[in-house]
Length: 225
Image 1 (cartoon, rainbow, N blue to C red):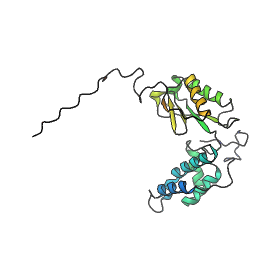
Image 2: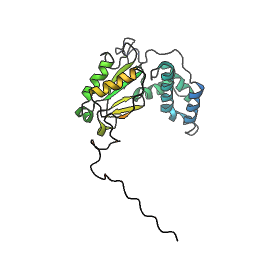
Image 3: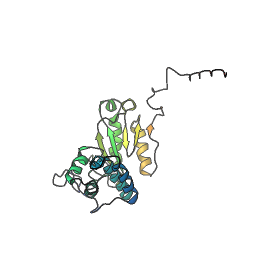
Image 4: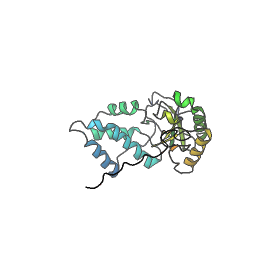
């Protein structure tokens, strides 16, 4: 769950949702997407769209501020649209770690440190991320606003470990130098290609396939009658 922080980035139970704008309203484009998600559910069941709308709110915040997170005003707006008690929306947003209820950097670096990634060198990936963020405490935004760092549990790409999650992209098969190169590119405003840093296809073995190396022979066509 997302720990509450005050304006200095330190934990503060008294301020569970710090910072952010005083008001938030979906733009027409995002409201259209929100309405499409609501229509997927029967009348009276619109609360089922809460996660979809929270995700849209985070993406609009990213468009407007450069950082993908959920201020209190955005959660209130979702509650109003879905006719839900605000506390129920807060419960959803604070339960799922994909929702960030405190400010993050323009690039929020989520590093998997579960056993498979750790065995494959996630310590070096995490160290590179912390260095890029100026070694501020995890969860605190770097002074330049570019980065924030978070250790996360399994991201479901164990065979391509270690894994770094940034925005909508996964970077896989990382080590210290390749992670640093990705972070430098992000800081320059570039969009590094996601996927394996070593170039392997999907979850294929390192070094390429060792079996089924030849393409299958296409079946012969039956003779025309």
